[in-house]
Length: 528
Image (cartoon, rainbow, N blue to C red):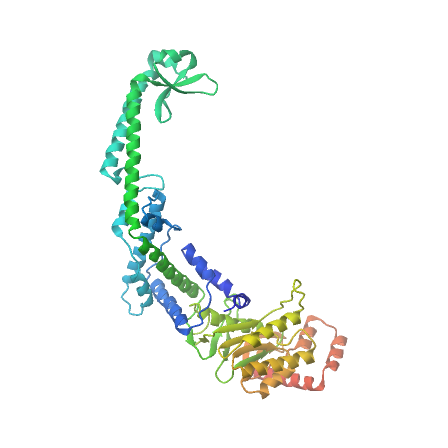
C-alpha cells in the first residue's frame, strides 16, 4: 500500500488518534506507522483482536495493559552477566507485573469468544517471586531496603550505632570550655569522616588530623585522634554495605538474565495486547462497528460517517459498490459532499484492513484490496513545475499503469483542470480503460458527457449528492441511479452574482447541456 494514499485518505490521522489510547510508547509508534493488510485472513485476525479487546474492556472490565518504563538492552545485558542498576531492576519488575496482570486479566474471563487475545496472553511469562523480591528489596532508583538481606540489615544497624557513638563523643566538644575552640557549634563531615570546625588560632589545641580548611583560612576541619579508629571502622562498614548492595543487585540481575528471552517476548506480546485495546477504545468512543470483510471488491456502507467530521453535524451516507456495477460516478454541486463520500469509502477499506471498526451501521461491508489508488485534491507543485492538470494526469497515468482486478481507484474530478471538451474525452477514455481492467472505483465529476456515459456503459452507475432546490443547499445524501446537477448558476445566484451576468451565462450553455441539466434538476426535485 502506497504511503501517499494513506495520507491522502487521512488514515494517518485516524491512526494517530488510535495511538493516543495506547499505553506503551512502542505501541504508540507501531500504531502511528501501521499499514493496512492486503490479505483477508490477516485483516480478519486484526478485526477479531479488536472485537475481543472490546469484550474484555467493556463487558468484563479486565482493564488494559499496565505501563512500564521504556526498556532497551537490559534483558540482554543481564543475560551476559552484567549487573543492572536499581532503576533498571525496578523497570524489569514493572514489566513482570504488567505481564502478570495482562495474563490474569484475560485468563480470568471464560467467554469462548475470547480466542486470539487468550492465545497472546498465554504466551506471556511472569515470575511473581522475582517481581516481589525486586519490589521489596529496592525502594527507589537510589535506595535499597534495609531488609534486602540479613547481612545488609546487620551492617546498616552497626553503621547507625557507630554513628551515634561518634556523635556522642564529639558532642563533648560542643559544650563547656572546648566550645570556644570551634567556629560553629556543629559536627560536620569531610571525605566521609567526622570532623570538627576549629578556629584557626586554636588548631593546635585539638590533637588530630587536618582534613581541610575554609576558603578564608579562618576554619580548619580536624579529625580528633580519639575518633580515628571509629571513623576507620565506619568506612569499613560503608565499604561492606556497598559490597553487599552490589551482591544483591548481581543476584537479582542474574535471575533477570535467566529470563532475558522471555522478557523480550513479553514486550512484544504486551504491545500486541495494548494495540488491540487501543483500537477497541477508539472504536467504542467513536461508535464504530465491525464491518464484514470480503475479497470480491464489494463495498457496502450503511449510514457511514467520515470519522474526522463532527459526529453531531455529520449526515450519514449510504453507498455501495462492486455487485451490480464496478464503478460509481458521483455528481452534484460543489460542497455537496462528493469528495468526502469518496474519501470515506476508501478510508473505511483501509481502516478495516488495520483492524479498526468503522463509524457506520451494523450491515456495512468493506473489501480487502491489494492496492488503493487515489487522486484527490489540487496537487499543483511549484518545485516540480507542475500545473494542477499536469499533476492530475501524472496520478492518472500511475493509476492506469498500476490498477488491476483487485484494486480500488478513487479519482476526484477526473479530467478536470483543462479544456472541458478534452477533459471529458480523456475522462471517458480513462473510465473505459479501468472498466476493462476489472478494478473497482469511485469517480466524481461535473461533466455532462460522463453522466451520459455512465447511463450507456455497463459496469458503471450514476449517483448524485442530493440538493434542495428550494433552499439551494446540499443535503449530503447519496442517491443511486440518477446523476446530479452541478447547480452552478443557481448557487451563483444565491451568492449574489448579478442577474445580467447569469442570463448571459444561461445563453452560453449548449442546448443539449441545458436540456440534460433541466431533466436532472426536475428528477432531483421530484425525488426529494
